[in-house]
Length: 266
Image 1 (cartoon, one colour):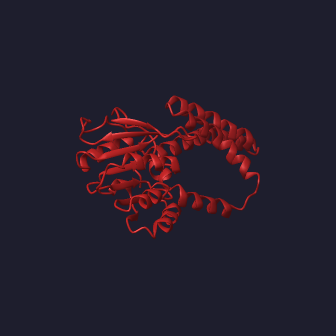
Image 2 (image 1 turned 120 degrees about the vertical axis):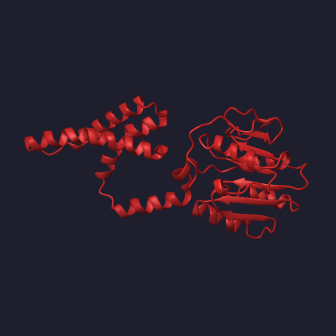
Image 3 (image 1 turned 90 degrees about the vertical axis):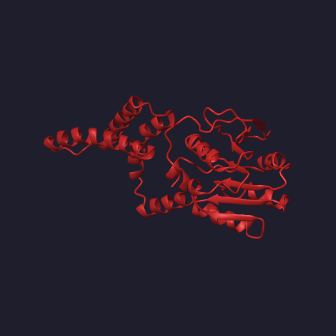
């Protein structure tokens, strides 16, 4: 089965192939040049139809509808291709998780860090893990406030990993790692925090309950685990209206969440 990103590429490719396989022979026989503006909008219409028939999310329908016309419009600007390569590399350095596993870069703010500090204040042997640690917006203030705890951050986007590494370099109780969250061993941590996205939550929960010791705490920023009621919810009270979903591992929680199709972060 194709990964979600590859399915979207295949859908757009199918729309382009369907239109061009009719347009090129037609205009070729007539000896006329292919009318690219009309062709681009025809591809957009077919892509929108295919996206609707396959019940894609609304944002994918919007992307499929606008992709071909935008690509044609940008081609008219005669921009040097090197700039597109540079832009792609820059986005890859920052948003690698979105490309590999539907995990965009969401940055936690200071009120969220303060709420996490309050939630973990009672844990004397604090072993805190931030999965997808970004720029260190959570680990840096927590590690400074709790010198008795041990804090680990895992990040796999090169640019954000480097910034977080530089921010936490002087903190002796903070371990900043380059790595894949799906290959990270959770057994040595009693609090895990994540600010990911809806698609990976089911697979992440199943990993948490299979690896974390009973009595541990999982805190998800903004995205609950499907089908699993949280032990408690915390409203941060910031401008984003952030909500933290807290799950006590092994405290009457199901051993596994309902199955769902997930693309894991590469």
